[in-house]
Image 1 (cartoon, rainbow, N blue to C red):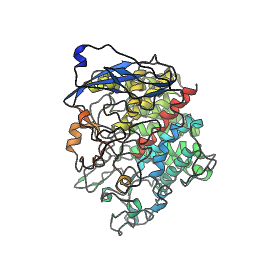
Image 2 (cartoon, one colour):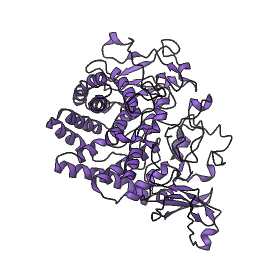
Image 3 (cartoon, rainbow, N blue to C red):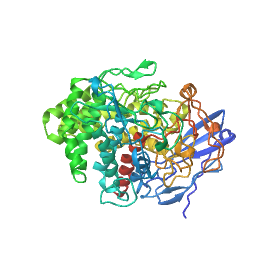
Image 4 (cartoon, one colour):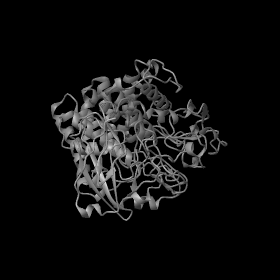
Length: 575
């Protein structure tokens, strides 16, 4: 084993600090990647953060850094560090399957669901077969908006880098190759559910179940929720009305249908292309539905939020032109009709950057999806003027986050991390990482290459807590041991492959209902307490704690979004 030791000469004042910790990427680095370690000095009352660039270290093998007499964890430099990782998030996606779940060896929610909010009152309460799909997170709720984004992200990754995805699992999630890439099987699983959630023209559903499901943690098949049809005997499926719907003592503020049906349109249009070779019947069926979805978005412009009954927490999506932009562009790709590229550009010009970029905060999923792939599509289109316009939009979003990083709190400057620490910050991190990769590939401009590297490495353990945010990622040495999941409660392993929410502002954590730090007995894989209390920056917190649903809960959509960057880096290494 080869090791390289680098010694830094530091001032005596720095060495008098109570502790020195060196953070690096836990899975390692590609030889030509930008490599920056972050040196933390101080104690629980105050930490300082210093960046140390060792990009010139390119020799393949195992290495360490030694600073202040402290040696970092060993890390690998190799052209193979990302090999096979693009398939790894699918481990969690298979775990999250509703209906038949091969991981659990059983089925759940076989009586879903019963229609509510249908404008034809005679249909309310009728049964609609919407079995399947994925549980959204550690509860059993299911949303078309997050499902559609997860599907599109996986399709995008597979379309760009099909060679990065293997075949070790069958269509129904059981071990064994079936001649179809595993990611395509997972895409099919999601598109089959979206197809069921759109049973007729202009009849779309947005949500299956609601927070009355939050009745403790247990196996999904043992769901004890009763929505009025008996315990575990069917759940409500919400019709997309484009109008406000129930939110406990309040109403959500939905204004139209575009945010949801635009996602249906892009998924159905691209999905019909992706699945044609493997699942031709489903491909043909959804391909015929794409235009109807887009037309409804034009007829009822605006956003559709989700609904809750018990708690105030919903997906508060408030933008929608990005969804219509992507839907229009995928219809252009499907049909070749020039009017769709024109409409896509008109939608896209209304929102040059996704509004969370460059801001300090946002409401939960207020600006979703967290990056606009429609901008990338237009930045790659045949029209030279549009390419220039939308490439600049991509750059503006990245630059806004970059400026927050270099002008932010000490921890943000140290880790070059300009993402706001709101609920699901890791999802935003993955989205910005994807945007950085796409912009760099399009333009060859490496202005933001260090931020791209920092975002990537933040997810892989180069963060204040030294935690790889992807559960059990091969090559990592510390990951969440107590994610917010029934699997931990019932002793059914871990949420393998899942991306946890990530840090939130200290003020957000202190304001949330039902979140606590119970269940922190024991230590992590490195023998350290899992609450990380001594390592918390002043501005943000992360806890590896079962009951901290704000920072330590895996999400299905965030996990699916990892497939692209992992596939991209593995491919770039081979080139």
